[in-house]
Length: 325
Length: 291
Image (cartoon, rainbow over all chains, first blue to last red):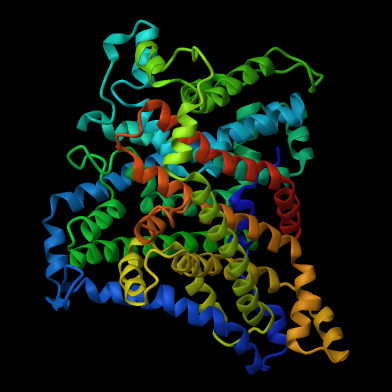
């Protein structure tokens, strides 16, 4: 099954930022004014839908406003309040949990799974077997995550399928209100997010392995390198660019996660699974505290931008190192 | 899953490296079991989507349905006016896919081929825009949409996602066009083709595979979007497939079989779309990898 991996589409862009050097140097100045016209629709729409609203959210974060009447300017009051807001800190701690569930675990497991599917199953069985297995891992990625969240929410209900399953195998003592107990809600949500996310690295890494010369593996195997040696020396080394891309896109997705939280727990119980994006949504539209919601959003935005820039710089540095070799 | 896979390091293998050995079967069984485990939630959903409420309450979530009950599917279909939701999702996602590709192509033409001044900054800006949390935009968008009379309209959602997807499309296409063979452009210019003509006659045909991939991804991404449609679309006539089921969550209508039936109906279009377009995707991906 040919799986549409979002990253294969993203990869060429992310690993090779447009390099204007060669041609630009040859022809230093022909800035063609006419081309600006082609940029016009994109630029206008961008300012209208992204630039303007972002600045306005920035302004609103300095005000108190319920959404009607005039926003009242209060300076940095909202940000000062954030520093002492328990829920705010909880939500960011939960973001770390989301990064573990959506980046760390899927990337590590995905590396091993992709290598096993490609190197062992793809080559020792038919490639179609590997493709079919890959599709099973990837399926949750193409579905609306909210709908998947609703199915999981029902499975995890006190009278849902998980407890039913425990009863059926004689483990009824373990029955639990999985999402209703503040102690278990976060780990359970993390498990669901691993399920959602795992297929993405698998597909990207398998696509990456396609471009690794198979003779490398053959040669290593003839030289007596075991699975683990081949995994470390060939697989990991060859697909490092993809690892960066997966790390970046998944980390950003983890920091922005909203739909699954909305469908599974709405941030509850007792904020045990609250995350910044849900906290902001709730503050905007349920508590009608637009200024405060804007402040939460701006902090989240700032963190995401910083993380993205750090990632991209690290990747560029690694590429330069490789280039120097 | 990690722990089940870790011990799978197939040990020494006999000289014939292909199609031999017990280890490979062990690996297949373990990975196969993990893959099946991924599908368990769908199996639960399928079984319970075809149960009557009475069947569910007497026999619980694990039993096989006593009869093939389609009442849940029918209830959900009628109560949420599912065809309308489907149509809304198709209109929004389809329009966004096409419009976002057009906008991306125009911008990328200026950036990748026109090499306008400051293009790296502009491309970086588009890239960052794609990473922004939608919370940072949603309130002003909601407010302005109300002021402009576009609140609760599909048009507002179409415009917003056209821009958000085009931010990514511009970034991707600009980098693809950055390596476009200059000789082709110069030849066309010598033949007297203007910029507009070159874009449609020379550039577009050459990046068609990338465009196809973008179309499909924009469609799926928009289809699955949740926060902005949730905020912008508040009634039966405008909501999309995912928003419809999410806003009904907890409603009295949604007993367990109906919830599962609704989830099944909501997932089917995406699965179908995925199956129909996987070949386009595969073609596009390999084409993109050539560059």
